[in-house]
Image (cartoon, rainbow, N blue to C red; front, side):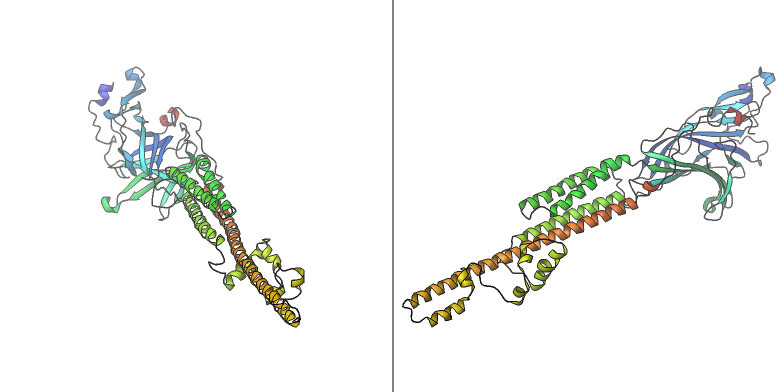
Length: 479
């Protein structure tokens, strides 16, 4: 029987009665696996189980003449098969390279279900990595036969589904199936969730090569969402924990331990950054969301180190080095400490009389000398000219003036040093609050700009498998 069928068979000619007749080919696909998504090269690797059905008028026989044989299996390379290939192929062979058997019935209906692995071009947008979703499509169509000789039709996953009509952005109408890609043998990916698998039939004109002839193609649109639990645990949470330790730099006293602590945080984050850079797709098309947060955190840690250096310098300033300017004293000694509610003796010792220039005698003097200033005491001594030891008392008075002046200078130096220390404390407190606010804003923006955190679309799973794909009953009665 096979010899008689294939005796005068030419596999290079379309199996139609008249050369002008179009050959209807029903095309379907079943997604088996999402093998890989290459963000750098923008390539989607998928494992598909294709299905093609057509009527071959040259492969018809009477079962009664051949012992009741109604179906036979033939090698696909012995008969005509449609030259359908992947238009947006990225790498490898766009044609079906696996040689498999076709199932032919006595009416000439041919069913071909070859498996294949495709690498298709897919525009990857990693702006929201690792909380991103991607949309890819696979475009299948005839290469040498236009729409007048090869009429492609979609095979719905559900037999009862009827393609709906839609209009694209150019105003061209096309047929759309919500369940266009079969999931009977789909194996869930460890990295991606499948959200949508639709199909559409388009009739497109390519004026650059083919004139006004239209070509029919079937496009499978796949929407996938990255599973972010791994990146959340290994990338996002550790980064936020390191970022939240940085404010403690502004709590450590301004000494060598402050610099040690801040540099330790910087080194730890740098090592963490170098390790995690391998997890981030190295592309220059867009800066990932997590990359922006890492860069922001690194900048804030660097700024905290610079502030620590300046702050230690301010804290260790002495009176002989420099004295505060008027605006510095007003801002860092009188205003900001009260705003920040810092309790310090410098604020408690200040009173209106001191601010006006009325100062009390030195606290180092005896109670008797606190009642009179040294000038008044000198005048008092002059009145007591009748004393014999006036010169001795005068000398004692001069020495007391020198001692009082020395104590006054020491007190002024201590006050100036305390003012610089207070300024250092104020700077630490200001940048502590500023860093906390900026870090909270950065975390809020990070969460707000993570679209998959608010994506409530259900995940598609494998459906009840047919026998296989659309089943024998479907293809046997489809023509």
